[in-house]
Image (cartoon, rainbow, N blue to C red; front, side, top):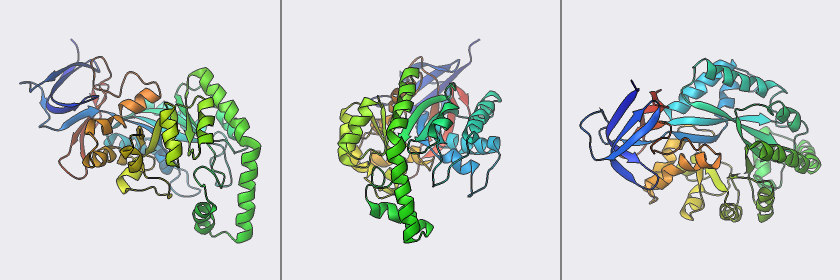
Length: 377
């Protein structure tokens, strides 16, 4: 006999509308969707039924693994703690960011992130996880050892997204030295001399390595069908560069000009959900809400606060964006961007990755979460 469940009296979030109705789940997939109330099944009491959220960029695992400078937590324990918070936020597919390349800001030793990826695979095999975990490699292209780190992942099927970033001062995330000085010199209490040497070294490393490493990483990803993301694009030249590398995802553009050009070029523009919830960027860059108002925001990422991913769509909806369009930023659009065509929408035949959300006003409540038809929350 098939494993079947029925959910009724739900506000079902579809691609282009929200309907009152019921759905049937059979053997882990969505079997049927019907308008109107059914007489059988679990009563959702008018709560939203939406696709499970898809998170493309979160650094949150890192904060569990290294909760204090110099401290390392047990990898499996860190993964399970991270997974619990992710799933409780309605996220059913998460791309965990692993940092490639060390620099003067620190980082992880060669092999440390490889061990983390192995621990993720082990946790999955042992059925420890509520969400499905895939890997997003964050490659600091100005780091001398980034390719050495990257090569340890060349045969890992968990890797489905790679971003190429360069945090050298005076460009991209830190277009002005005022921003960079505030973030690094003042925060760390550097002397003028130490800070000047630090800036010069970062800029020299960027000139020496960034283009060469981008060429290597993008070529590998395009050859092996791995989605490529740019990061902190600020100028039209940055966008043109992203186009040549086959970039599908423009992460955190730092100017309206770059965001618009990326969107018009067919890339999905990603911004942080915390930016939406807070109403501004934590680093002083552009407002994600402004991009949404202009119709050039495509994907939201929780970045450093997992629960922001379920809050941000409702904040946008409260400001006038149709809720189904806001929900698409955390479900169907990220899925399409990275080639996950089996999830991200409520449609017959797709995976029954679902979230039940109660919300009248204010902060939404995640009542239940299903992954492939199995309740995990």
